[in-house]
Length: 507
Image 1 (tube, rainbow, N blue to C red):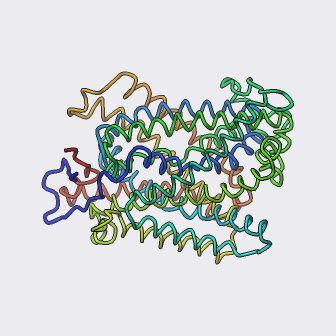
Image 2 (cartoon, rainbow, N blue to C red):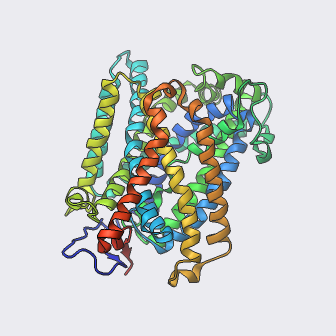
Image 3 (spheres, rainbow, N blue to C red):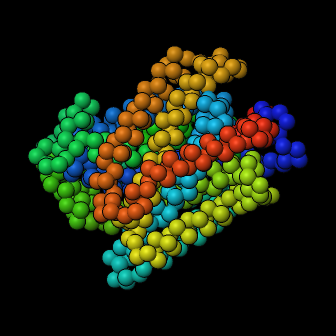
């Protein structure tokens, strides 16, 4: 495996390090990608909100709509991944489609979002872990101890070859998926709950209806939280330089992480609504103190008390895997920007790989430091790990990801239909035009949903200064990247031509 660039006259003497190729297969990539979504956390965290305050019993239909839109996006994204294998996925894709200015703007923004996602997930992990330890042993420990453990573990595991992290994530992911499958399967074979299997909950036409009888409920809330359940699914493309046969495996991983995970979400949310019955599901989900019982009560009834205890443990391990996956993502985006040395010294600080493991060890260390500082700042300010750290940084990261995703969908269209090159022979009216167009428009709609429902999603944290600054932070990151690219275009053309162009060359 070699690292190549289409750029001529790159900065003289610049050495490009590379990640270790052929380190993980399709299963390893899928483990890391699906772990970012953390199915058990997404279901337990998002489904009750959608049921109680969003589209009620039609929450599964909301997941049907989200699956459709994200699969349309994934079809175009997968076509791009067949032609461009680069660890800075969005960064490289958007640069090739919309040009270096848009590419660097999105590269800076998506790097910021992945950097803040790790401490966000560290916060929810620490919250659940502290609560679990208190329940099991009676010990009430500060959430900071659990946060420190996860930050250290993430840094250590990411220091080594990516295959090690993939194995750890694989174990955690398999266990949580088995738990959700066991619960859902038990409900299905029992014929559902008091109202049966309620198949009408799957009607996508009713996904846009608010929960019946709930004052202030909004279908938009339900749809937004459905989409939030996929955050990170696009990360498969960033492992292309380390994957075996990336032109085959990465597109498969992209499609599966959208369509396969989506069908799983539809099934689980449907069975949970059916197990409780539509009216009872809405009642339980409206009270934060009982919302998790939307899952725990059917688990106890259909599987037994032992399964409830295991379920709670798997929520903790699921968030652990999620944080580790986001750490890997952040480290690789920092590395992708750093190795181009667009700013003096960034290649040495971020763009080097380990001589033995082939991992972006310096970028990983920097990410651990950044995440630790963020967590410590929230702790020193007396903020709650769930209500503040997770919620605020999660919203910041989600907004950035959604904006960049939407732009990437349109970059696919331009790349295949306007940018000259041999890739044009693969342009297709559906795969590279209609699908990414509809997916991109759908993602623009999701961005609007986020803005419309962001205050509700933030809860009490909506009163904070950071919440008010979230849109401005994303706008500033986009502007900073664009201005830097424009500066290079005017003053350093060779460096400008290097932006987002480093890719893996296939033998």
